[in-house]
Length: 142
Ligand code: IDP
Ligand code: MG
Picture 1 (cartoon, rainbow, N blue to C red):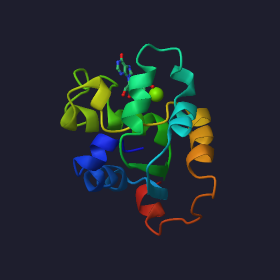
Picture 2 (picture 1 turned 180 degrees about the vertical axis):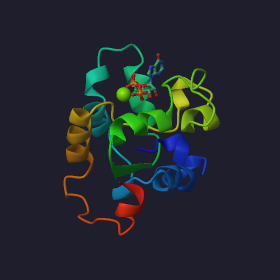
Picture 3 (picture 1 turned 180 degrees about the horizontal axis):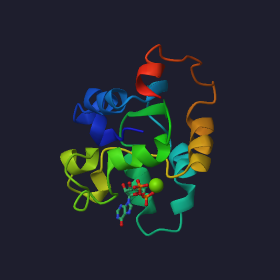
Picture 4 (picture 1 turned 90 degrees about the horizontal axis):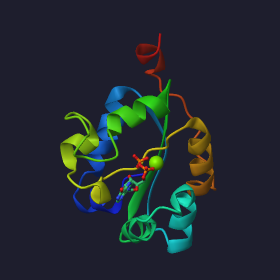
């Protein structure tokens, strides 16, 4: 999910391009402003954290872009493309390393496991996601 700062800063195309060029397949995409109960559900695992309220305020502060990407090891590799949670520690070349400074304005969310990806896809795309296979698949996957 591209967070409100990523949308406001015009980073949507850049971020989509990084996942596309890597070779992952886009299976879902939408611009959406979520409400507080939705954001609280998305971040339910963090509800006990001291920064939870600020995090929810941030996520509901403007439109975000929900995305579903498919591919071999996409969760693990996607987290590497995104970079460490705190941009002060994200390597250059990662999205957060290249475009963010503060942990509370770190541009993008990525699912941290296949299990949470499944839950998050169900939450963000209750209408379902696209069924398609890129004709480039055999040029990207051995
Ligand atoms: P992640 O986004 O890298 O998976 P999480 O630990 O799941 O990191 O935290 C979710 C989001 O909460 C982070 O992306 C960041 O925006 C925010 N956050 C995490 N830790 C802190 C903190 O210590 N202070 C302020 N915000 C934080
Ligand atoms: Mg997380």
